[in-house]
Amino acid sequence: MNIKPVLVIGGGISGVTSAVEIAEVGKEVILIEKNPYLGGNVVKFNNYFPKLCPPTCGLEINFRRIKQNPRIKYFTSTEVIEVTGEKGDFKVKMKTKPQYIKNNCTACGKCAEVCPEERPNEFNYGFTNTKAAYLPHEMAFPYKFQIDDEFCKKEACNKCVEACEYNAIDLSAKEEISEIEVSSIIIATGWKNYDASKIENLNYSNSQNIITNVEFERFIASNGLNENKLLRLSDNTEPKKIAFVQCAGSRDENHLPYCSAVCCSASLKHALTIQELYPEAEVKIFYIDMRVAGRNEDFLVKVQENKNIELVKGKVGKISETENNNLILEAEDILSGKKIKYEAEMAILATGIVPSDIKFDLNKDQNQFITDLQKDGIIPVACSRKPMDVSSSVKDATAAAVKAIQIS
Image 1 (spheres, rainbow, N blue to C red):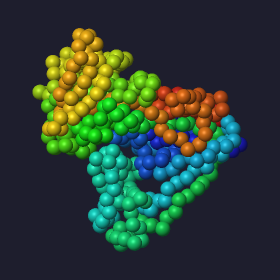
Image 2: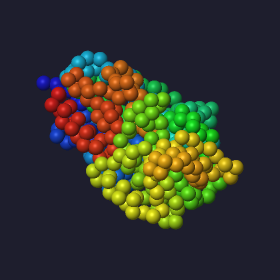
Image 3: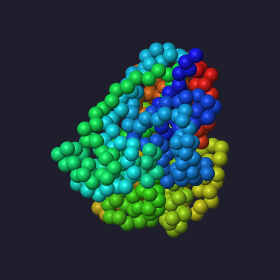
Image 4: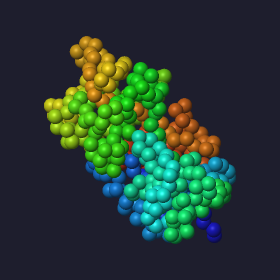
């Protein structure tokens, strides 16, 4: 009997977890990821709760499990464009971007050294640049350089080909379309942040000193913009007064009508991180309701005990910028009944979780999260079906692995 493999779409922490759990009980797995590396959003974090582990903590172990397990085949820079068939017998069409750098790349970096072109570094949300020939990040899996198709001049330049001693670069590589047959499909396509530029009253697009919660992770990370320092983009100074704006666009019929479940815990974590680095800094967190649960309540207790962190129950209605690039936050303090204006040097917007785009048709709810298709052999997991933190996503991914095996 020819037993077909399980397909896992999405190589973030949920997809990787599902893949290794399935493979380690003896099933064949195909794991695909649209980025040129596995790890998803989590690999960009400074740390994640509840244990405040750096991304290397969990992902490095799972990458080793993938590398050592012949039952897992993975494809990066790849997206699913069509799914046909039925439970137990799906046909899946995939599109893989041109692989200009082959797998015999040793990551020596000589291609980047001679590359004359630059590109925005999406790993740092465009705040920094890399060469068009680049290593995605220091923990990239697979660990090899990439070439950005949009910025590379290819044969018109050819300097990277001349510099490569291992014949690992083929600038004539083409996009590939392939088809596979699988028994069941796990959708672990993850999430993206809501576009803060749409929230016009919070002035994100017009101020360098207003950033989002995910951007803050890259600002503060040891491998991020400033190596464990928080610096304002406007003048490269360390802010002493920092404001967090909860529910930025969330629980709002004009933007996201739902709660994203993780934003409160993330901002509490961020506030405590700031206090560790800058004990004298003043932090205010403006919130509607402080929604934390389980072990994350420990963060709330620590914040409440910190004299330099203040929780203000009130939604920020407007942020404006002063002549010296400081920020004026206007809100109503619900507990006192007073309207207040607070001058901060930096503001972090807790924007909500939005499900990532998918190229093929699936049943979705009004917020674009995938509805449960388990009976049809397609299993949405973690943030593809509803907002979740990392711990919950890993548990959900393990449960999805069991379901996929049962379907097969």
